[in-house]
Length: 238
Image 1 (cartoon, rainbow, N blue to C red):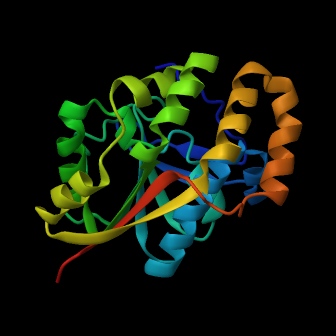
Image 2 (cartoon, rainbow, N blue to C red):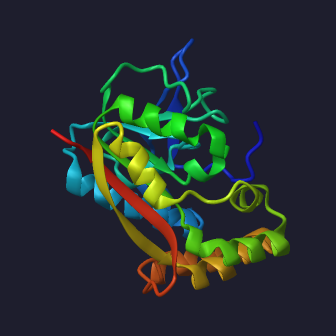
């Protein structure tokens, strides 16, 4: 499966024969500085929440984690990855037992699942997680910017944002509540910075390298007036 994102160096996925869940092994945590700004901020934000909520010994599943870049921010954690493009596994049918992981994390995954299948994905995350389900995705308030990004770049991933419609966070919380979870939504990341960075990344990829390094080093904590993302953190009710 072709994905219009370049896999990051600094982490490798060790995939046991006959399995479709890989273990992420960090080779160089500093490679996170070479991520595009948008991947850097959303992965770092999710990693901070994980560090606040789970122990270093916790087992984590990065659902739809592609190249395992989340592990660059959590080098001390045991992180498994399932992704159709890199491990051959589907988040709609995770080959793991109930409560097999302390937490399931899906960063910018739900919006790339067809709407008819999103409920199934959430039920799988809830089933496999023992305590936490943590999600990140572009929020519906970013719709106008997403449409402009698609018009300017014709990016396949942004096309799914626009044509499949972005997740509704109230619906996400209600779905997870039916599986015994309660949670909250935190808006984050500047739409304004993202739009300029993302268009440059797609139209001028060579020049974007220097731009991304500058943004990652100096503007990872840019104030959020209009949020690009919603981070949903849900905990299983006891």
